[in-house]
Image: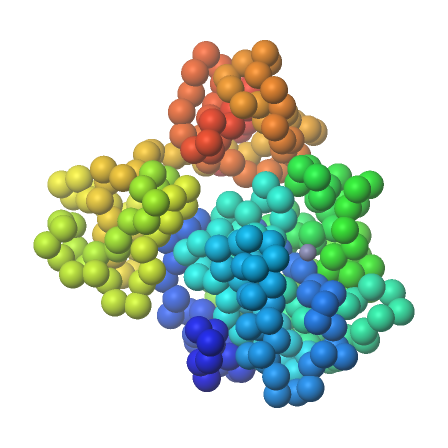
Amino acid sequence: METKYGFTKIGLSEFLNWIDQQRVGRTILTIQQHHTFMPSYQGFNGSNHFELQKGMKNYHVGQNGFSDIAQHFTIFPDGAILTGRSLDVNPAGIKNRNSGAICIENLGDFDIGKDNMLQEHKDAIVQVTAALCKKFNLPVNSNSILYHHWFRLSDGFRNDGAGGNKSCPGSNFFGGNKVENCEANLLPLINQAIAGHLPITVDTNLLRYAVVTADSLNVRVGPGASNSLAPGRDPVQLGAVLRVYAESDGWLKISNSANHWVSQRYTLEAKRFIVDAGSLNVRFGPGTNHPIVSKLAKEDQVFVLEEEAGWAKIALNSWWVNKTYLREF
Ligand SMILES: [Zn+2]
């Protein structure tokens, strides 16, 4: 592994160990697949990984006004993986869909007639996605592995590419960018890659979920402010949904395997639900008199923070849905 400009370059064989060691406070529900479009294969010379990554960060921060590079990982044509923003921060990948997401940018232009994806690139995309599914207990399906193309650009509504969408991750990405292409071509490869690993486990020790209400909340090695900061752990961020495994004197244990604690005072209890309607309006308040700000699709998952007269608040910024169409997960 090599680190430069704040990014770490990880070989595919190293990635599986590396991801195992990461402790992530956010509850991960989805993995986004993108292509960089620019730079494409033409801009990659076999050794300029860090320079290309730095260029993308400069563009995202300088041109788009993002706080950091948009993605968590960039996968390069030679199969190398570069880290991007912290896994404890939501990405800037798909409008209104970044909460609980991991964003992968695959370097290249995979529209029909453009870059021909190399075999080592394909292998890395499959193996990395499989390792993330295993790490975060995600089922291998088209509700947890998402292509940017399936979401309307203007508001993030999932329409599976029916209009107003980008082609990203490319109209020839693993044979096409439609849901059926993903299910026929990519998901079976990910399932094969996972087959050698342990099966997905049920998180039986999980007590509940909690959402972070402070801008940034330190993670400590014990329940109390006198305990030192957990080494190698980034603070958890505003809006992150944490998994709670134990409680003690106003402190929450947020890792099943490690002694990692945060103060409960800066959290709210959250309940996990799944959308049970074809299309569900998200409104800027609890009632149909409030304007529609977004839409959810069947099988989307949400965390409910508050309930009021049959309505459920699903985000810190006052987004509400009719609770009739939610089913507890
Ligand atoms: Zn994209």
